[in-house]
Image: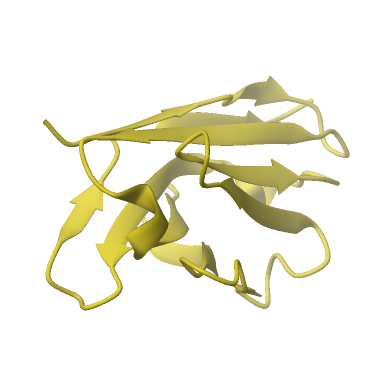
Length: 118
């Protein structure tokens, strides 16, 4: 059974940091591009970061460059998103997504809420 389980969200003050995790199971993690998306209330879901299967190369949305860092541990089947210098506009539900390098499979997690407020 395929599972993607995000954790690490919460309420944090502006300027704070969080580390989100996404634990994967039920598929060959190392063959999947892992991505982080977020969806704020009333807005479209947007891609914030992705990390490739083999080299671990990363790419980020312009709005988060320099503050967000994605990483993966293929031995632990987990992908991380380190979020620094949080801003109120970072408030959203954060989702992880796994896409096989061939494009044949596509899985989503259930999301974790990040709220940035003083």
